Image (tube, rainbow, N blue to C red; front, side):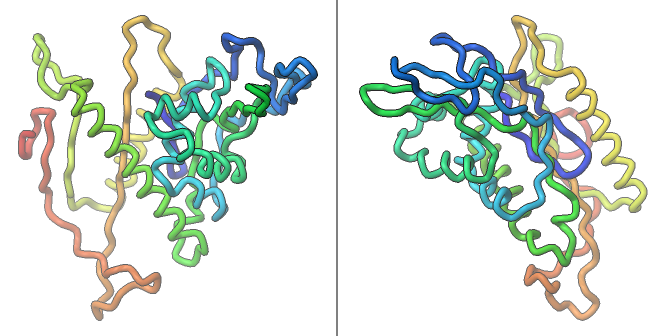
Length: 276
């Protein structure tokens, strides 16, 4: 499923439509329950941000959990069909509904999702939730050595890695992904894990090349073709600086960085390296 994306300054890769009418009627943002127990509201609703720039600790902490990212993924993927209840989110994630309430509240408190409408169900007010933005971007300033939110930013990134890993394993075990060649010899999936030693300017050029691909996808938006497939693209590119001359740990308490390694790695695209 198309998911929520948090990217470091440069690429926005999620494109979702505005909230639409669901099967039970139009759900209005900031809606209230009227005398008949149906959804009501002002009919307009707050504007959904095209992109949200994340730079505060509260939002980063809300993003630093794979399950909360999964909830956000479901809501952002469903933005074109309408808000969802906690029960519907739980069904999409195959998780107990009671397990989600605390996480939903934390996402709501951080302003990442909001109540788009309410209704009475057996005398109980049921909320429907929608995302507050179409995509997320992690501000580069939060990664500076003197940033108080640096650790929170890395925790959010690690949660995203865990989320992708969990999704991939579930889909792979269910036989829903295929890294083998088709009848034409082409590969539909791509896996590469390499460490190269490059000049700083080459690293910058590589990042720009990758960013151009993301910009192209973002400009295209979601395909409406009948044979369209949901694609996950997870990219992690970073340069590792030299370790301190005295071998001491950096000021943030992390281990000294190892020296850059020569070109080694594995891939499944038929290029140099270990075929996997």
